Image (cartoon, rainbow, N blue to C red; front, side, top):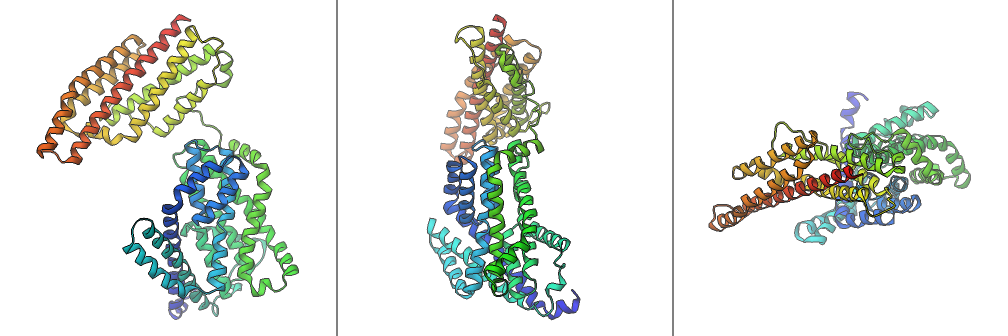
Length: 537
């Protein structure tokens, strides 16, 4: 493309780029609006109705069709698997269905944007939606925001059409890679890159449709690019797996592998689709090539679903081999084979809990500003606690009496308090920071830090009898120290020495440190009881 071409056709170029920008903006606004209006309902539906790969595929299709974003659906699936709300195998159905759901945008573009030419009408709807967003309230304002986004899509399409039509005299299908196998692969790569840049396969499909409508590319070239766009859209799900559990990573990368497999099949489907189209609808590829393109997009995704869905379990096993379970720093000792010997399994759990306690207690001290302590990855620790809980549930004792029973019950209590303490640390860290950074709480902060250091030293030195004594003494001291603080802070708020927000932060900090000291005491007590029961065996 020469400088002369750019100068002579700058208006068409600006229209095409501006149209793409408006299309993307419309998609973003529409998706945001629908998330607000129906996002929670859609997320609840994904969890509620995903009971099998088939039901997952149906809910994935419907959710994507409504939210206008396969990325939003697949990212939600990754999050649900990471949170343990749905299983990995069930999440695969959501991913398979989302691929078909995302083709609905192409149908809307062709049927409303191209066939009905509603661009001018939609400008009025944009204005109406903007008025609602500015002057209405609550859901009505969100509705205005949403329809403004929906309308911008068609305004963008209209501009893209006008811009692309300006290229028709200068850019022709012969300027693109030829219709050979390797030519199609190059076009597929162009589609991947375009989607990686725009982060929207819907935008890519709209551009391909506009170029096809303008005659700058032919059906075969557009089809190959659309296949690549389906592959490119998987990057969002991959990014969502960063820092997630193994199962969440499997879900995200399953989207990649499934789309690559579907793309390979789709490349070989282009020619048979054209032959069948010519046989059934002789003028379709010539007179309605845009309609044929969205039909091809839906067809190859539907075929991919039909072929893969019956083998979902096998696909899941393949992903488990590709992304194997990582050996956890905390739960290496939890071997399924040990469950046949409950006493040994209990020892394995005890060892895991020991490592988890040290990690969690050390994290608390690090958050409170102790330079000798280190933070840990709280998501990994949560996964380890959950895994330990699941393992302990598998232990079956013949009797509900005796040392083994006492040991089991004590460790269940220990894990329960650790889960709650973990929640306090992860979700209420701002309250810990209040304790750390407020001079009024320096003494209380030091009491907790020193107590945790002493408890961990006792554990590592196997002086089990000291654990509970230190924790209980610390709790009593803190409760005594903090009792007058609450009254004092409320009085300072009343006198205007503290504003309500700052005073509330102080009160929340007090509540946090008291709860932490309580859980420290109960964890130390129950873990010590488990160790005492071990000695009775």
